[in-house]
Amino acid sequence: MAFTPDFLFSLANPLALLGWALLVLAPRWRFTQKLVLSGVLPLVLAGSYALLIGSHYLGPHAQEGGFSSLAEVDALFRNPWALLAGWVHYLCFDLCLGIWESLDARRRGVPHLLLVPCLLFTFLLGPVGLLLYAAARRFGARSELVSHV
Image: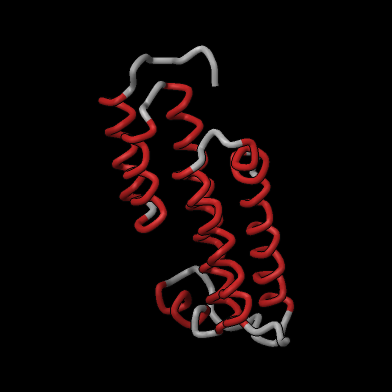
């Protein structure tokens, strides 16, 4: 079994999808609390990202691409390892955003059924889900702050 970008991609996606499924389908389950809401799953993704991006900048392609212009970003993501790192970055940060939305919704009394579309849009379209959650938070909260989380 070779650790190729494609192989690692096939591991990272289901790992993130597991987190999203637990947030949507079993938000109060103890396993969801221990694996997702505690931050363990995003930390696994963050560690993977650190290894991937670190190996890029310490490897032979370190001078390829960058973040100073769109052309440099394009050059960076032509490397499949850097592209994988970028994808894991998105998986990690979007999941962190979904966790925040879930915890904030509990705290504010936003019904889970109202939260679910926000989570789905955050999973699929990141910032669009955040905008949707901002509306749900503003108009769907049962009370400003719920005493128990």
